[in-house]
Length: 286
Ligand SMILES: Cc1ncc(C[n+]2csc(CCOP(=O)(O)OP(=O)(O)O)c2C)c(N)n1
Ligand SMILES: [Mg+2]
Image 1 (cartoon, rainbow, N blue to C red):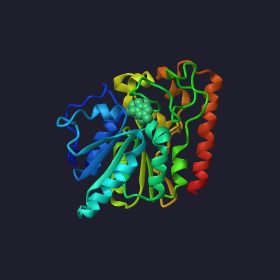
Image 2 (tube, helix red, strand yellow):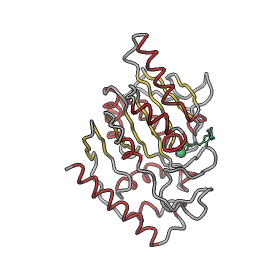
Image 3 (cartoon, helix red, strand yellow):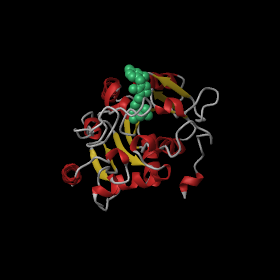
């Protein structure tokens, strides 16, 4: 398999919790992008996971940033690399959902609108995990967080729709449960010029209340229930890259403690969201 052939860009040691979906995601993403890479990491779990210089787990250079400016810093690095003639080096922002959907959104939107030549990745663990599991606008309907103790009453922000409105050249979603799909999308993104946005669903064991061994399984159930569509949008053209089997939403929800208080009515509310989303996706793909 190609995965085995690709060179590892992460050292064996890192500071993530056992079973961290975001750690697995970085491992795959950097394998696909290779060593000619610069990574900008705004405040998040990954600020910690990567470790301190000179012992960082990534073999490629890392720049830490505040939430608000990660895409601007990445655009600046891109400009500097271009001035140095280092066109072959890829610049990637690796940000959490709090950064992407909420606190850093202004600079993300601005960089996308300017079509900066960078890859922006949101590893989406659906809450502010590093500061102790607070809700973000990516937290799904019904999920427990410390700031939604009775379950969130709003659906997740449709960030793919928001990014689509920026008319950028490439948008994709991925999960670690489908590594070949994920690697292919990162490799494709690497070859495209302009602003590229990739959303990676990244289960968080303490935040979601799942076992360390369940990260990949839960990622797969998110896809197969239809809740997390695997897709890509190239120059506005949508393709579904994996047809889900539409297992019951309950099968995805049941193993996760964050959904423990969900009622039958709540489950129906989520099923309705899945139905409407797929109706729209099928229409758009046609
Ligand atoms: C402006 C600002 N507000 C709050 C914080 C504190 N803070 C640091 S990391 C973090 C959580 C980030 O959440 P997310 O982007 O989803 O990444 P995760 O921790 O889930 O990996 C917060 C709120 C900060 N660093 N800057
Ligand atoms: Mg998060």
